[in-house]
Image 1 (tube, rainbow, N blue to C red):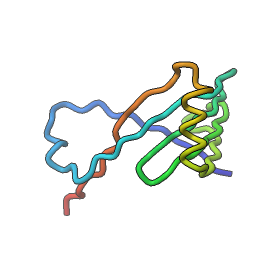
Image 2: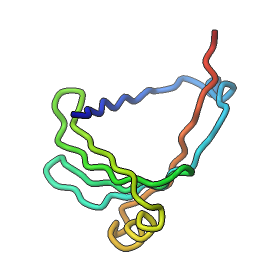
Image 3: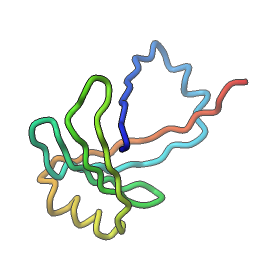
Length: 97
């Protein structure tokens, strides 16, 4: 069973920007939310997915993610997210030796 552990970091300055090698656009929409559970649709450069997330338990929660056609994800984002969507960017970093 897949477990998601989400981590957040507070950065002290812009020094991290020197290590960025790729930036990818992500469009993300919340389809449903109830009692800490949620269903999310996501569109990225390499495709789209639908994720079902359970309630948090400690640091993690169960998450199931399924690839779906981008055209269906676009329609879900447009018709089922009721304004609960955002655009964000994923960054890939060059690792220091």
